[in-house]
Structures are given as C-alpha cells and as structure tokens.
Image 1 (cartoon, rainbow, N blue to C red):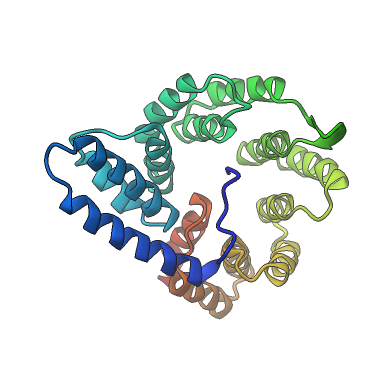
Image 2: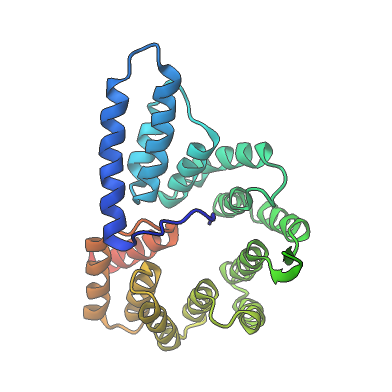
Length: 275
C-alpha cells in the first residue's frame, strides 16, 4: 500500500538502513529539551512508522501506548497496521475509523480505507466490512487519465483483488478464483494478483499449483517474502515438512518487514510443530 517505496535498497540492505535511522531517531529524540514537545512527537511519529516498516509491530504498538503526546495520522496508520499484524483488530478498528473520517475521499488515502475493511472483517463484523468495501468499489474509478491517456487505476485493482479475497475468506473460493482470473486477464504479470491466486489455490486444496505460482513469484523477485511464506504453507499442506522448515528459517533470518499475512503464515506453520 502507498506509493512511497525505498528505491535505493531492498531486502536486508533496506532493513540495515531502517535500523540505522531508528538508532539516529532515538538518539535525537532523547536529546530534545522539554520545551520541544512538538519535536518529540514528530520524532515519535517517525519512529512508529519506521518500527512498523521494519516489521517490529509489537514495539510500535508498545511505544504508541506509552506515548503521552499521542501521534499524528500517518503514525496512527502505522500503528493500526501493527495491531492487525499482532492479530488485535479490536485495537486497530478505532484507529482506522479515525483515519477514514480524516480522509473521507478514498482516492486520497485508499490504504486507510482498506485497513478499515480488514479491521472490520477480522473483528467479526463481516457485513459491515462488505458494505465498506462495496462503497469503496463505487467511489474509486477503475481507470485514471494521465497526460490524456487512459490507464488502469492501481487503487481500484487493489480493491477488486480484496473483493475476490474476501470471497475466499468467506469460503466462496470458486467465486474468488473466477474474479482473480478476470483481473489477471487485464494484468497477467501483476505479482499481487498472482499471490492472491496462489492463496486461493491453497484454500481450494491445490497446494501443488500454489507452490508453482509462489516459486515463479520468488524467481521474479527474490525479495518477495510473501512467496517464501506461501511456499512454506504449500509444503505444509503437501506434508513436506523439511521444505516448510527451510522456508520458515529463511524468513526468520531475513526478518521481512511486510504484510501481516506473512506473519500469519509463519505463526500458523509454527503452530503446526515447526517453530
């Protein structure tokens, strides 16, 4: 989610840069005098965002809860993501509601509205999450115009993929597969859509097919940590425990910063006896 990406480094190199920035941030924040409270809050906001980018969700949540000055909107977005990663949607939900209210036009911060959909769904408010997503699908245009040329809107594609995945999460895997097929006809090389297709393949009981998709995703992008998590889950479903452990060990060594579902895959496999 979001357009800002680290362009100069990825993978472990990027984590090294983030670790250095976190260290500098902590040192600078501790040196600010008491009158500079607004600067301390700014430093805290930066730190919360970096902690979540680094995959340190528990640290981000703990520092936010201990902060007497509160946090800004972008920092709250990072903390809301952290709560979802920690499987605490009840703590994420009020933050996402606040963020969505602060940016009612989803074309400005669609990721905040998507976070609200996730938090509602994971809190058991299935019907409300479905209504929220339907509203987003009607509010965000499928196409945008740039320099007079019509192009697919990546925000709408993300919403359409979420629509398919919500079908899968609700055991409507056939419908999910059909929707992803239609999306892939328009964007056959889109890695996110391919990852969603692999996830639905697992849900449909096709781990060998899922493993093939994840393997291609990993070959295309060695820093695609969701592919390693998917390969681990596929191996578990195929009872290939040594392969599953190999993928999990790599993930733990790499300490990927990304999505909550990467963490869920590792947790789930670990609960299967491989932790």
